Image (cartoon, rainbow, N blue to C red; front, side, top):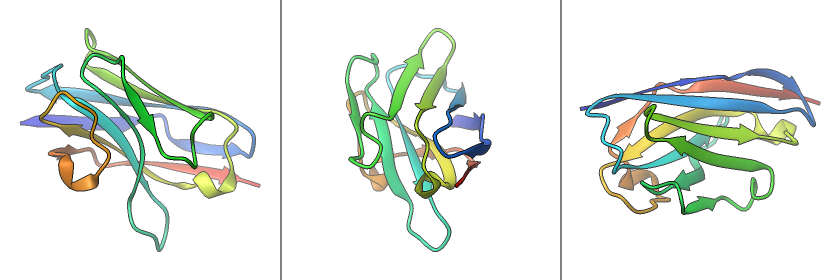
Amino acid sequence: QEQLEESGGGLVQAGGSLRLSCAASGRTDSSYAMGWFRQAPGKEREFVAAINWSGYSTSYADSVKGRFTISRDNAKNMVYLQMNSLKPEDTAVYYCAAAAAPNIRTREYQYDYWGQGTQVTVSS
């Protein structure tokens, strides 16, 4: 059983930056692909970014491309989401997810484990 815990959320002004962290424990299998999703009030959860097991391959939603960067440190069982040039529309609960497969996954149903989420609020 993989356990995920997000941290780093908070309140930031538009144009600011935040770095989210996701700590993995339990099986701590570094061969898992990892991803970040988000859910804004009244909306469905959506894909944000994903990274393969090695960290050499990444994928981003068009809405965050060029502003967000996903990375991982397998030695520390950590995944990060660096968010720059934040916009009010980035306001959401951000979830870390793990897929029991090595290659990138971009669909919610492809992920096996989920964290509880961390709130990100961007003020205008």
